[in-house]
Length: 550
Image (cartoon, rainbow, N blue to C red; front, side):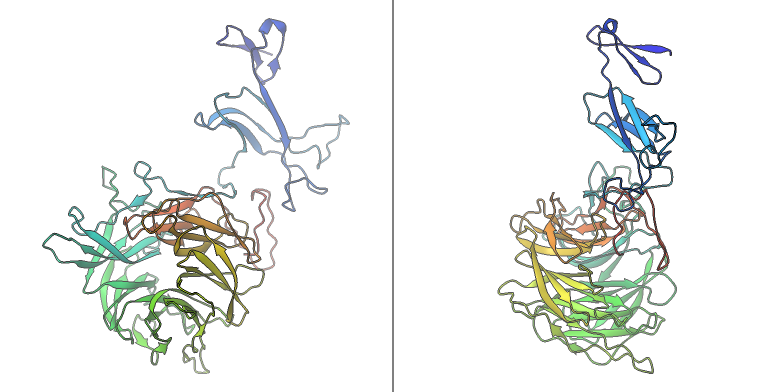
């Protein structure tokens, strides 16, 4: 074969054949340093990481070596192939198929990485940890463009909601807040802002040549009072997302109609049927007629507003009392007892053991008339001086029922088990390693088919956001362990949504203090598989991680 001479800083020479084979000899000084690695690619049917009987090797898979810290410099590549290891002239499909062997000159200043080349049109599937999206000179957050931001003053956030407002598959932000110019002559302004995502997780003005951190505000609506509740959905059946806003001291809800592009117009008001006061707002179909209804919850009362399908809401009966306990904190509207109707789980700020309650949906009668909510049942728990705050739902154990997870002001995360009929009891508590839990949500961060809990709060008192992100990893049996490493959210509110259209839920974050808005993404995309019940889905390119039961 032809050979090439390799220069060597020590004044020696080395010889390498075109096939990459090392040539040794006393006249070459043995200066050429080669590395070799070999292995087998096989079909791991039981996901145990070892080749077992019946699991065959796989040919035609491209394997390569690259030097990561040197800028992904290519070192060598090959394809898996047959290798007659015993020299008998035949190939055993289990032991002699799918082999590769690479000889390469290592990059001594870098970590040399062996990897399987991802075929075009495919994505690699691996567990990973979240990272902030790098935008604008590595900044990962945005400042909403409040009025007169160039002046000194304070911002106060009331509510933020991540939802796809323009049907591009990426979550946008609805944002309500107050601007207090402090020393300026202008009065305090209450606003609702629409911040549109460009589809890749960027919220900035595309014409901004200076790559500033000011988010592009698509729309801004000034309100007469602070908006403490936001909810979105297709209210009028035109497939476009609309939204509603709950003012703290008004008897009405504000309605806004969307055109599907992220453009909204004021669409009047509707009575909310409650005494005035700050509250939270939920959207969902209460009577299973296909229309998006609303539930408003403020201190001591819950009101249900049924939609006629054209975006006209009416209060269903009288308010549902939940006692005069405290300010509404959080909640979720989902089916808790398996009857197909959306129930309400909500928390309120109160220093007793009645801080979290469940109201079951009674469904409809024979004439499809909604029957309202049942009396609230309170999840009994001795909270002492620490009240419930954020609430989320998910299936954390082996049964098919939905559980509730709540965060408490003493940094304790409480998992409440469902007996299947919507009756909950405290089964476990987990410590997030924070001084205070300000928000939490549910996702499968390591792609093992089990729900995990992402928690955000204060790690070192109320004035720091250093490493305030935590993930409690679930095992599918209702047990959770604190994952490492911790990460910085620079925020105290989070919401799991899809921000960059890669098919994997991301963690949106927002800070009441710094007004930072952004999201964390997961590095490796994974597959979305659509199949009918009973179908068997098999593959060798799923990263050898079980898909779980979802």
